[in-house]
Length: 232
Image (cartoon, rainbow, N blue to C red; front, side, top):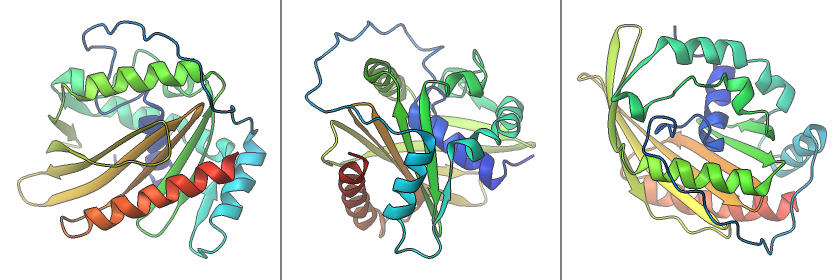
């Protein structure tokens, strides 16, 4: 069973938040608690309706953009969880773990997503800035251990390789990589971008090729910078 479009966006949001990551923290080596740092950024405080309206305004120039609300995304959780539990990742520490259901992992943020032609944008607003910082640091430490892994779903095995990319937006923290997957017959590449700023987490994901990646990263930086201004 392949995930539906809604489930894919829910999974992307989970990836963005870092509670369910390509490199899971629950089976990685313990990571020391980060020392809390005072934030000079004003926390963003938006409820689900306000966030949905902000994203609708932000993407109003794109007639093909579809905004999905927090409620719409959460309605896909059962199917997403079912799909997650059906796959096998090797090594297991580099895959999704199920210590908590997806719903529990996403309870600490208000979320929304935008589905474009061939790409999507995800936004999560955390209730607790320190919790977002902890998730971010834990996820990054785990990702460093898992640049290569494989996923088996529906009897098909795909090998994945993560290649880090340079990205520098106005956010406090950025992460970008190209994920290359192959089943021995076909190869696919995805550009995955995450940026963390105060209590806001932004994710962008789209198909890419070596000739497109540089331009897409520059476009992602611009999108993140403009979105951060919009969410204030």
